[in-house]
Structure formats: C-alpha cells, structure tokens
Image: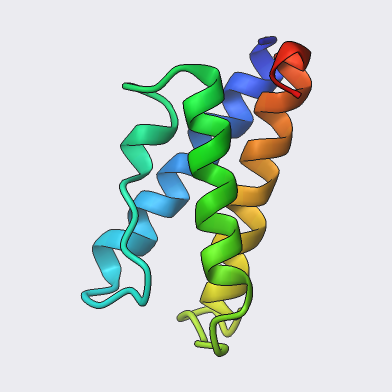
Length: 92
C-alpha cells in the first residue's frame, strides 16, 4: 500500500473515531480500530464494507456541519473498502 493510501486510511479512520466519540448513540456501533490496527487487509475491507452497507439506508442525521452523518459514515467506509481492495487485488 503506497503512502497516499496510508494517509487516506489514517485520516478517514480518525474522522470515524471523532464521529463515534461525539455521538453517544449510533444506530450501528462500529470499532474503527479494526480497520487499521488489528485486522488483515481482507478483514479490514470486509468490515469496512459491512459498516458502509449498515449505514447506507439509515435515516439522515445532520452532523454539526450540516452533512448527513450516516451518509458520511457509509461513504467513508465504502471508500476505505475500495482503497484496501485496490491495494490488495488478490482479495477480490
């Protein structure tokens, strides 16, 4: 995985952590640490895709900046899954 992918994943995981810590009740709890520190690439990609799917159809909920937080979680975790799979094509 190249440096730009690593930077993208690290930044995205930090945003997910901020959301999880700020929101006391999430409709589908997640552990963003599983995406980068304790998982194989396949486990991380699968878990990211599961989170993305779980949040895809959640009702909108505005974040402090006005963006739908559930869409943001779904979009970011979907992008994480895609990035991991592009860096490790053998997973497909």
